[in-house]
Image: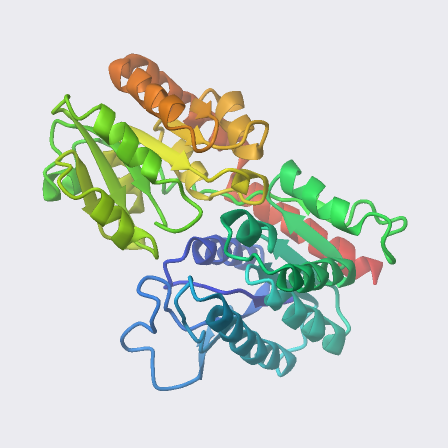
Length: 415
């Protein structure tokens, strides 16, 4: 079938959601579908249009499986909420227009959030083409922004919540990554018009990880040699350095373990909070900062760590499931997750036996968990192997693509 996909990022952009949607698209193409992907020009890494991609507000690339339309994302500083809202509005308008004038009539429209506004563009395109609309939720907005304190104006929060709820109601299906997110979304539309008899509108389809590509590898690899990490015990945070992560916990743990010259903490990535974190870490010899690496090096980066950390601020694990968790499990490395109890991330770590889950924003508990696994390498290795076994069974590309395929067919036949 023909699929119209609206998403904020797509390869070669390096955003985590871009990686997710690129992988989903590849699997859908492998199942025989044709796609028209409408996305942004690459801009995520430096919050500016990448060299070689500027000069035009809209670009089209035809492929053997369909077309990619890239539009200007109007990049802004994440901390400037009004400017970011205007940027989202401009990007959404261009994306929606491109979806409306798609060369081939789609059979289904799939839109990804965040940004939440892409839901409106997806609904408009689906309505114009008279086809089902599937809304894919990676992070629940505005919940995440409210938890971070980025949104505090009650009127703005109410307006965003209204858009969120109305988009859920108008979607033929809403896909989320976990049971936590399903409960969150379902509660917001319970008893609302259009939901009677449609308790199954919200579906759980996890993001997948390519377990053939991300595999347990040698620790002493080229990444370690490049950054002077040979022979060290490496505790790594790899990913976006932003407002959602409690990376002050990493510095607290590094301070506590500064007496051990063998232990090094590595922050691999970039983002709006990087400069502040680097300033806070000034003079700490056991903390290293490494810039975001090309996608091709992801297996090597993941393998270079003895222990990975996933520190999310209080409340965020109920609205978000970081894709880096599955990368860590696939790499066969143990993880210390600082997240809300009872959430998908905590349950996954505990059920898989893949590491330790501690309460969010608790520096003492976080540090003790890291210290325990650093001092017990055999236990850490066993946890890494358990995580690998778990992810092989649960989040394969084929299983996730089959779930989307079945949903699309169900909705189309229902029409």
